[in-house]
Image (cartoon, rainbow, N blue to C red; front, top):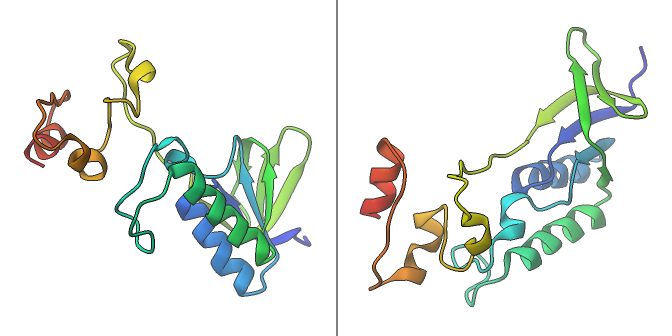
Length: 161
């Protein structure tokens, strides 16, 4: 079976965009699929101070846009589409979308992660005092009283940080 692409990447967060940049630079026929908008979790991050190359910091939105622009300038095709299912049983990978099936020799799943929430209204204050990453946002709360919510090792590690 002839394939549509050398590579299909699912997810346009930093990992998916980076994989797309490398594949496009290697002149592969690559398609990046994203169900919402490119950027992943950094898209909703207000301010980033710990990313190399931006000593004065950069907004998550601006960093996402720069990554997307760089990827597209190298020839990466980014398509807004949700993957409904996969068929990985043969050499040709089948990515089933709502309106069609895309095929590829290889597949990268870079679907990212999302924090577990308590469901007590924290979305209203996300980026305005509520954070899900002490390593990322801890310096913004220096000399302030903070509360870490969670159980297990991660909550303890975040609290110590």
